[in-house]
Amino acid sequence: MSKISRRTIIITLPILVVLTLSTGVARGDLDGDGNLDAVFANTNVQPNRVCLGNGTGGFISCSNVSADTNNSLGMALGFVDGDSDLDAVFANAGFPPQRNRVCRGDGAGGFTVPCSDVSADTLVSLSVALGFVDGDGNLDAIFANSLGSPNRVCLGNGTGGFISCSNVSADTNASLSLALGFVDGDATLDAVFANSGQRNRVCLGNGDGTFGAPGNECSDVSTDTNNSLGMALGFVDGDATLDAVFANNGQRNRVCLGNGDGTFGTPGNECSDVSTDTNNGRDVALGFVDADATLDAVFANTGQRNRVCLGNGDGTFGTPGNECSDVSADTNASLSLALGFVDGDATLDAVFANSGQRNRVCLGNGDGTFGAPGNECSDVSTDTNNSLGMALGLAPTTTTITADTPDPSVVGQDVTVSYTATVVSPGMGTPTGTVKVSDGTNSCTGTVAAGQCTVTLNPPGAKTLTATYTGDSDFQMSADTEPHTVNPLSSSPAAASGDDDCFIATAAFGSPLAPQVQLLREVRDQYLLPHPVGQGLVALYYTLSPPLAEMIAGSETLRAIVRAGLTPIIGWATLVLWAPSLGMGIPLVALAFGVWVALRGVRRRRRLAAGLAVPLFPDPEADYPDISDDGRER
Image (cartoon, rainbow, N blue to C red; front, side):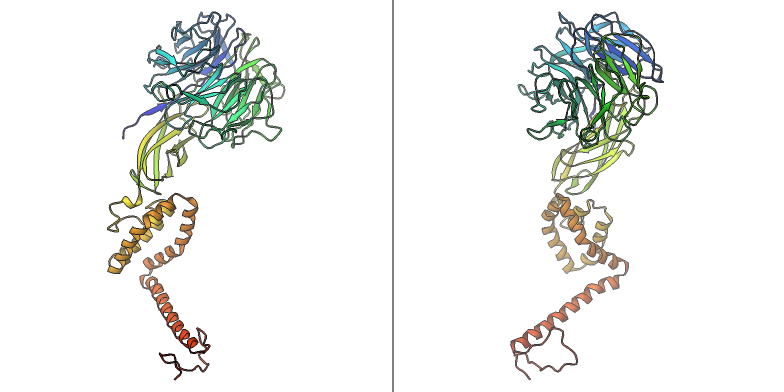
């Protein structure tokens, strides 16, 4: 079957411009030694810096990315030119404005100089994210702009350059951050923008580099008009639909639970507070900080301690009134952060980009805390640049639906969907986590290692199955789609001949291959179809049962009730196949008993009509008058 693979991106989460600050850092392996390295985007006429990791939680040395001294406020890492070396894209803003820049990695921890312009745009760009927006396999860039400029999407050519740039939408908000992900459940990347003093916006991708419909490209995430400076997307409430977490300045941070269709929450109640904190939130990153299976949030604050909020897996964090705790005793001006495995163990660490202070790395303990009390964090280097933002250099992945069996299926039938999630070359490693398969209404979830899950599809019609790999701390999300047909039960060509599934049992047990269904089918074939009366009963069943079966298949409650009702019938069918004479004898005995009871009832009614009180089951020792057929005593 033909596949179109969709891969997602490196999400960069920078923040507010504070004069000329070092505004971003991205993390990835730049020198090929297997250790995470850091790239910092700096401002205040300072060059951007790359710091090579030593694999034990520290960094060996730092050096200039290039001779550029732009006001870089955001950045992202990705394979922009198609080779095996990570490249860096910087979002720049200055007075006068400056062009955004792309710097191609040399694979040895440095960058090929000089860097080049992304485009001729000279807008105030505050953030950038990389992703496969137009589906051609080349990384594209989306820039969040401020000061009345529209956000821009620049389509990559796969060789380190960008073909053209265009407006994401007609919005001219003060966008300070953005993230890309599969917000509406299809296989095309969507963009969510964090705005200051305005409603945050979601723009659903069309898969060709454009968003939404002309004039209606984006919609509000919620009615909130907070000062959102940073944001992240992740599966916060465990339902496999992307949720959004916003870092707000001077206000409570907010979490907006996605519905899987591009909207969030319920009208008027789209978002809720992460905690009672009202810090100067500048950025947020999501990850499994305490090593359980629920996403946690780490916030970068300025002039206050950075905070970690442990998720409960239902969209809430911590306990009421105690939702978050301090990452460390640091009270730096942290403007961005990134999570990753800096020291090579299996617990997530945090790196903070600070303004006018040394950047800091805090090694996680795997329980939601960092480092040792009083010594939670250490300096990344002796640099005291003005660092403003950071981005994660996660490896891109490809998700592929390899089979959906059976196809076509019938209403209420279980369909097994097989899938793979693999890293895109030149990335290395094996993705972990989960894959969700959905047709927009029905869904199932399985692990990457399992390679499949089973979903029951209804109602009938043409479906599009979407398999979405949710990503992990090392690998990006990705998705794939596959067409699938669900036929109504009554449309089966074998129904008239009786050589088909037992509709009601199939709907109740979820598959024609269920042992209970096969048992009933065998009794039908052996004891009903060989006889004219049985054939009539089967024909009547196939006439009446399809609409009932479709109704049953659409309700889990009805399926449970029918399964319970079929239990004694299945027990009888088992007895028939195991001991035919005994099994068939049971209904014959029941029939004979019923006939006898009926005849006795007739005689009793006749006696009652004659004015004689005679019980239905008379005492054999009692002397009752004999009544003739005309009701007279003989």
